Each structure stands twice: as structure tokens, then as C-alpha cells.
Image (cartoon, rainbow, N blue to C red):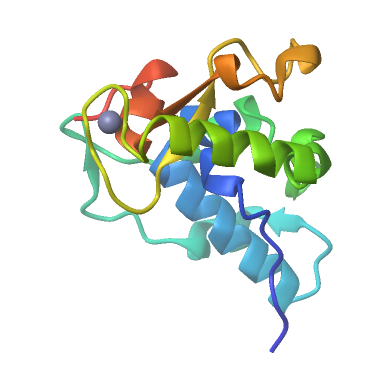
Length: 166
Ligand SMILES: [Zn+2]
């Protein structure tokens, strides 16, 4: 057995939040598949169909289609189409930054200031996210400014990014 490496901020990443839970699930399944079969990130058309069975799963009342989930993974930069399927793209460039002591300190300061409470709905428990009010990618100089951070639960974080949850 080998291990699949996922950045411990993976679930908070903006592109993961925007892509949504189905993409997150399929991407993790693809990472496991690719590591298990040492495909170097390549997912063939037939392999993609076997990663996760979405039968019976509905979103906004509509049955989930694998092609739609894969399309979102491509739109949000997790996968890239290639000749006989898809290639898992490299993790985003923000990963190293997020693992820095400065970033972790920023995150801790925001969570402490907000009493580990979602500032939109008051949720208090495990799995809180720290959201960058002005975008992480576009304004690197504000990445570790505590005034540019707000504590949110996963649902409210998704909503700030415009993802509707039914
Ligand atoms: Zn919330």
C-alpha cells in the first residue's frame, strides 16, 4: 500500500470550495487510483467511469452525471483533458505558501480572534475554514494580514464563493 499526498489545507482551497463536494470526491478517488496503478496522474475514459458510482445521487433535484463532474474538475484546474482521457494537474501553486509558518500563524490568529466560530452562521466545531476576504491568488501582499481573514464553516465558505447548496 502506498499513501496519497493531499495538502492539509486541501478542503479549504478556493478552487475546491468552488468546485464542490462531488468534484472533491472524484478527485480524491482519482488520486488513489493513479497512485495504486502508478499511472502518473493519467485517468483513462474507462477508468474514470469506475472511480465513483454516482448512481442515485442528485444535486438540485437532478441526477448527477459523471461528465458534468469531470467538466467542473477541468474548469477548476484539477484535471486536464488529454488524448485518451484526463491528466490530473499539479496541485495549485499556493500549496507551499499555505504550508509556511507565516501562513499557519495567520490562520491561527484569525481563528482565535473569531473564537473559532463561523462569522456568517455561528457554527462552532471542527473543520472551520479561514477565508481570504480579498483573493489569495490576486493579492499576495495581503495573504497574511489578519484583517484579510474571516472564520467560516464549510457551507458558508462555499456560499461566499457562489456555490449553491441545496
Ligand atoms: Zn457558517
